[in-house]
Image (tube, one colour):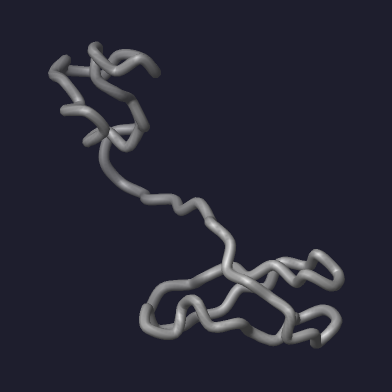
Length: 78
């Protein structure tokens, strides 16, 4: 089950919730002020493992061993 972030419209606090994908857009209760006036926000994620470098053709920098990231396969937006 994914973790989603919700911003409270009353106090601005970010609350994280472990929810099913089907319930992702439903508001949650703010963990700070208990308001129900919340909405889901875009959040970033992190992945571990693999190479931390990017291909030579990627505008972010080179990758050990060369090759092309295939328009975002390296994890960087093009």
